Length: 201
Image 1 (cartoon, one colour):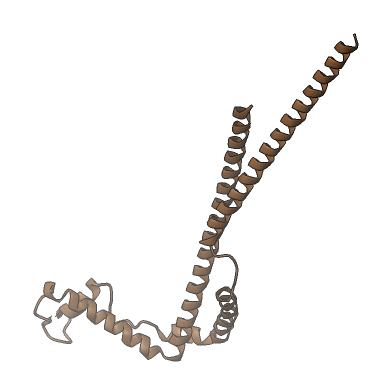
Image 2: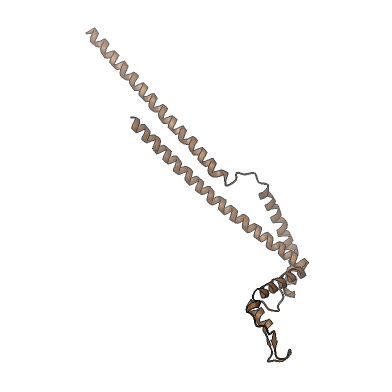
């Protein structure tokens, strides 16, 4: 009987452990999905803020873009020809090594934003600013949230699992003991009744 009770306890423990692990995995997937959604929200907010900043002060971004181009040129300067240009400046047969090097690193004389791009951004300023305000409310609600953090959820699941296993163990043990006591008492009553019958005969 002890082996049977122990098997019941082990089975209940295994069942509840598997259930807790499945619940923890589900919560982890939900947390990862929510984190990815929040990251996408932050990225979209950053892009819109950059677009508004570009429309307000395009010279700053253009300056940073040119600085990045110069840094790339400086990084490959040792592998570029020392002669900058060969031939007449306005001649058709002139070779501009500086222009060639700019093309080698994927840049040219074109600006970061064309006038058409800037006008398109300015035309959509109100729409972009409205999106920024809407996202700001969502991000503020996320930062002020007081829900259970993803780190606390697995520990909470483990504690609930341990409590559940202990509850099952106690219920199984108490029920088994009660049944055993009742069975012994019933057997004792039957034996006592049989003894009285024998004495009467």
